[in-house]
Image (cartoon, rainbow over all chains, first blue to last red; front, side):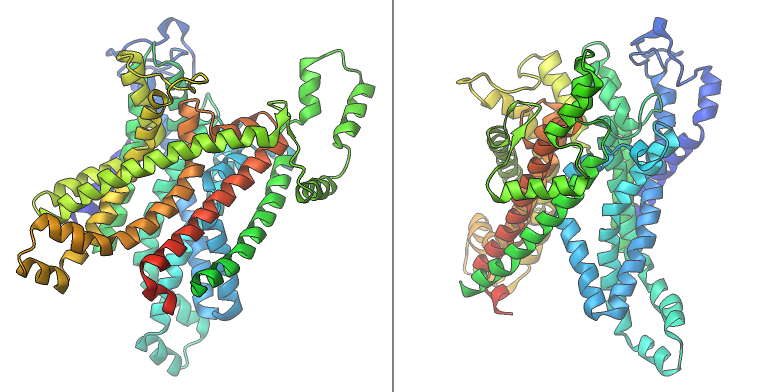
Length: 273
Length: 314
């Protein structure tokens, strides 16, 4: 229980930081998107709590705005992956036979592939060639979430299927069937609620995976594009500036670490309780 | 032995089918990337006329539909013609092999280091209950550290501040590779070590509770001997499987570490090829990484059956 509580506290703090981003920017009188070339690589001071980046933008407010992107991508990916994964797992367990075989071979195949190189390849695709606008922060987020869901549903589906198989073999499901409950109602009312715990664990891990993957893609220049801050592209800038401002590399990475540790603690906590 | 052969015979066609589907999907994805080789040539030489462009496109076959180009490329592969890398102006095979060697050296050293330290930490946690919460907390935290961030911090500390080790790159021909391996290997091994420690703790704790351990202790076996001779061999089966599985996923995961340290390995090569619009190199690098990953998985399953024959009897 303490793990779960600690993880929720960590994630809650990050969520509050993300929500407070505009207020912090107003309070400090800083625009996290506007360059201020007189303040390039400014060291930490009351005016710049964590210093400034290569264009003189305040790192602290950029870090808070980055939390919106990272947590947003993480939650959206996990939500979509959980819905899709639960549906796939449930259908596979319920129908069995060739449906189950095809879905699970597909899942195995996706797991066997080298995920990161494929993510890089997919993220490098040009949205303009598919008729989508390019370079908008919202489009970037949607693009990254779509790519990540493509791989993200597999973990949820496997856990959901395993859980559903156990439940479908249980006595109360047989009793419900004997009472003439329709199959839709059976799945919805009797099987789905029992999947809450495994799906919650898989979703928490999916949030962690998505946050990490987004930061990696943004770090490689394929994810969220500047000037929109994300923890990943902030780290890419910080690596360019290891001589001028070595401390700038500390904070975005620390933020990613806390977010991932929070999700892992929640997943651990739920699976133990 | 017959079981192992049957498993391989079952798995190899699956691997071939996956590679086929992956190559088709990747070909279509690359077709959707911005620019093509000719538009890059235009960028570097503004004197090219529209007629030149059309001629170059026809020469490279870029005026053909995407699917026809794919079939022609696939037919070439089957004839053993792997083609050229446009970015490096060399045959693709001449670029791929050194990169694969570099990545395998990096990942191999990291896995060995991580497994050694991880199993030691796991043994500590399993034998000394007082140390267990500490190991547990430390590994949980270590697993949450993003590897590319750790890489940057190591560069700042050991290359920029202290100046002890190179910040990245590759040794000159004939030079020692070791200084260039230390930081990247540490970066990859750190998170892996934590994973092995957690699995080793679980496997050894379960093993130490079994009757044959009590019997070994009752016969007066010393604690180190009980651990090494009686507990570790059984606990090693799941660990070795994990090791082989990881070796596969690490080859693809090395992409980030290699980019951070500018190491000329498979991952960096693939990234550069994707960014530089080098279709052929990107595709073949991706297929090679996928093949290595899947063969490692197969090796893991075979090793597990060999170590624990009960698994093959089902």
